[in-house]
Amino acid sequence: VRANAPNAVALGGWNLPESSTTAAPTVLEVQSRAVVFQPELAQYVPLALVDHESLVEHVPNARDMPGSIPMPVSMTGCIAEEDDEDAFQIDATSGTTLDIRVESRELGFPLDPVVQVLDASGKVLKEVDDTSGGRDVRFDFAVPADGPLTIAVRDLHRSGGPR
Image (tube, rainbow, N blue to C red; front, top):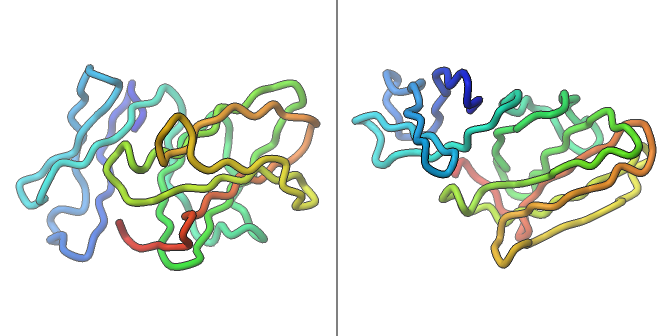
């Protein structure tokens, strides 16, 4: 959720009433977080607050057809089924450093993410699994050359699902 304009967020799930498909987040000034809660929900949903564009993934976005995204950006997505992998393409500039993160476990979701950064030919430039003593991923990537880069995200165990 964008910190300076926390609009309504879309909610999804097999057990949500049709009247509960959107909700306005409540901003918490503690730890740069927001939460979504509605009486129909079993629990609150934590969200990260960011100061840049915040988008929801569009399918298809597989490695061979990555979705093009602007920078800087935060993406919200779902590894929807077994062997699913989401891929996003950016126009990178040599000499810049990308701050790449996948927040799942710290938000209460079961994904054990693996992130790969690939060049235009599909060569893996970097692969990162667990960082900072946890299952989520966070790392800096120094862009080696101008041109498109693909960032691919999958579950370590090739699991997937709506959670």
